[in-house]
Amino acid sequence: MAPCPLVLSGTATSTRRAFTLIELLVVISIIALLIGILLPVLGSARETARMAKCLSNMRQMGISSVAYAGDYDDTLPTVGFSHGGETFPEQGAWFFLLQDYAGGTLHYRCPSDDSPAWDVPDGTGRLRRVGYATSFLHSGLTSSPTYQGLNVLHRVPRTSATVYIAELAEESPTGFATSDHFHPETWFGDPSTHDATIGLQLEIRQHAERANYTFLDGHAENAARSDIFEVDPAATLFNPLFVTNRVWADVAR
Ligand SMILES: [Zn+2]
Figure 1: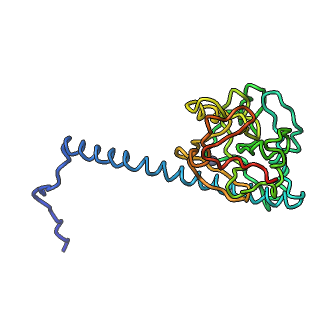
Figure 2: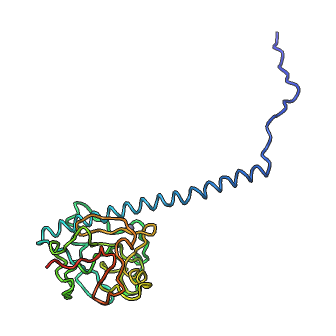
């Protein structure tokens, strides 16, 4: 006997209903609100990571500088990348000389460093080769008696309180973006112009309004510019004076 075919009859009543337009708009606006809240948090977490990588770069440079000085009667390497028409032998630049003391590769570019001069020559026709700068006061290239001898570590009274390396300006009409050093002895004038003057040489707000600094004892810190140096209004060209001074210490005599 053939089986009876199963016949379904009647229709099922669906209890599902679609979102109304209003409900959809509410959901979309809540998602947009959450994205708006989360994006800055994610952005600041990314910047914190970049700052930490940069700080690690700068600590490596600090350790390498101290190790280098240990091999050269306590004398620091000199600067080498010219700016504004000066010419020094590039092979003698601190950054090249420290590579042998790094126990690995020194990373010369901060992850937040977007300087156009990495790819396009600046006004002096040069490309950027390092994103960090040593203080010219510790270069040994100055003839000024005010800070002569500061390239010899044991002649610096407070190495742990004296900045040696800072973050180089990304753009500078005066050629600092493609140099490898900064000149605290040129910071003077009306206090309202100090940030602009220093900004031609250094990035002082590279990481969330702060920047990283390496000190002569090899340690590195993330700090606000005002915690590192406040230029004294009485400072004059080649006569550096600071109210808050973690950038220059007179030589031990
Ligand atoms: Zn940095």
